[in-house]
Amino acid sequence: MRFDLPRRVLLHSVAALAFVLCGIATADDAKTPAGLRVFYTGHSFHMFVPPQVEQLVKSAGIENHKLVGTQGIGGSRVIQHWDLADDKNKAKPALTSGEVDVFTMAAHLAIPDQGITNFTELGLKHNPNLRLLVQESWYPFDVARGSPGYITNNAQRDDAKIADLQAAMDDWRKKLEAQADDLNKTHGKKAVFIVPVGEAVVKLRVLVIDGKFPGVTKQSELFTDPIGHCHAHVQALASYCNYAAIYRVSPVGLNVPRTNLTDEQHAILQKLAWETVSAYPYSGVAAAGQDAKSVQEGRRERPRGFGEAIVLKPDDVPAFPEPPAGFDRKRDEIPHGKLELIEYDSKTVGTKRKMQVYTPPGHTNEKKYPVLYLLHGIGGDETEWQRFAQPDVLLDNLIADGQAVPMIVVMPNGRAQKNDRAEGDIFKSAPAFATFERDLLDDVIPAIESRYSTASGREHRALAGLSMGGGQSLNFGLNHLDTFGWVGGFSSAPNTKKPAELVPDSAAAKKLKLLWLSCGSKDGLFGISQGFHTFLKEKEIPHVWHVTNRGHDGPEWKQALYHFVQKVFQD
Image 1 (cartoon, one colour):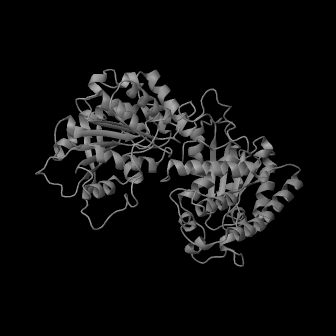
Image 2 (image 1 turned 90 degrees about the horizontal axis):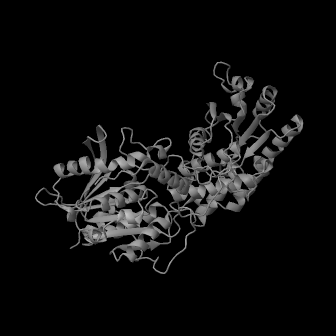
C-alpha cells in the first residue's frame, strides 16, 4: 500500500511543522511587516549579513522586500565608502535615487566617522523617511591598543575579563551614540540608529563562559583570529540583530540561515538578538512600539508542542540512562568502519541521487549484514546525520564493545526531487518527502542490496529518522511491515499520520521486532510522539518510549541513535 497523503492534509502538516519549528506566520498571526528597500555598506564584520537577512525575510513571508545593493571594503571605516571613486561607488547613486528605505553602515574603531555624517545628509536629502543603521562592532574591547582587553592572539580571549571588556565597549559606544544624537538633532528627527551587535556578542561570550551555549566551551571558539573575524555563531547573531533592527520585528522562531549550527544554538541566538535589540533605545525598535516584552510582534509566540502546552505524564521518563562519557569520541585503538558517499539511479525522481553509506569494521562479502536506513530532518540532507551524530563513530565504538551488531547504515536524501538541496523555502519541498517513500522502496533499497552484501528479509531491515525523517520512518515503516522489522521515530514531526492511521491493524503491528519512539520533553513536537505512545499503550502494542529533558536538537538525536542501534537486529 502506498503512502499518499491528500494534498489538503499534507499542506496542513507542513504548515504546522513550519509553525512549530520555525515560527512561520500563519493567517491568525499579527500582520507581517511591509517590505523595505535596503542597501548595505560595511567591512568584513558586516558583509555576511545581507545574504542571511535575505533568508530571514523570505522565511518571514515579507513581500516586496528588495536588496538594492551592497558595497564591501575590507577593514573599512564608513568614510572610505564615501570616498570611493565614482566608477566604483554604488552607495551614493543608490541614496541619490531616493529608492532606499534603510541604509546600513558598519562602524570601525575611529569614532566619530565623517562618513556616517555624509551618508546621512545625502540620504535624507533624497528620501526624508530614510533610516540609517550603524552596526556596532564587537572588537573595540579586544583589539584597541590600550584597552583592558587588548589581545594579540585569539586564545587570549579565553582569559578575558568580561567586566573590563564591557567597560571598554561602553566607552566606545558612547562616542557612537553621541554622533547619532548630533545627527538626529541637526536633522530634527530620529533617522540614525545603532544595531547593538557588539553588546549581543558580549552577552554571547558570557553565555559561553557560564556553560550555557551548547557546543562552545571557550570564547576563542567564536572567532577565527585575534582581530575578531568570527565563526557562524557570531555571524548568525549579527544577522538576527540586523534583521530585527531593519524590520523592527522579532527573529525568534524564523527559519534559520543555512549554517552548520544546531537548531538549539539558533534558538538561543535569536532570543539573545531580540532581547538585546528591543531593549536598546538607539535601535529604534522600542520607539516603534517594540519593547522587550513584545517578543513576538508580527510573529506571535504560541504554546510549544503542536499547538498544545506540554504536560508530562508519569510514564514520560527515560527508558535508558545517559550514555557514558566519551561514547561519541573516536577511539584510535579500535577497528574502524568505512563511510562513503555513493550515487544511485532514481527512477522515481528521474536522476542520479546521493546517499552516505557506513559499512562496519571488517566488512566482507563473505558475510550478510543487516541494514539500517537512517532519515534526516526537513532542513537536512544525506550529510545531516554525520554532522549531528557521526553514526560511524558511534557504531565503531559499540561494535568494538560488543554492544551492537555489525550493520550497514544508509543515510539517503529524503527529499525526492531533482533539486534535493535544502535551499530557499525548505517547506515548499515538503511533498518530496512523501514521494521519497517510492524512492526508498523502489530505488534506494534495491541499489543497496545490489551493491553490498546484505541479509534479506524484513527482520534484517530497520528504518529510523529524526523530525521529518521520524515521521517518514513511522509512516513508511508501519505501512510496509513486510519490508521493515524495526522502526524508530526520533522527535517525529507533524507529517506523522494519526495513530489510528499508522496502526490500523494492531495484530500486524505486534509483529514488529522493535517499535521505537523518543523525544525530549522540551521539544515543541513532544505532543506528537507522546500521543502515539498513549495510543500504542492503550492497544497493548509493544514499543519503547524514551523521554529525555532535551529539546529538538542534535544531542537528543545522537543519544537516541546510540540507544536505538543497540536494540536493532538483536535476536
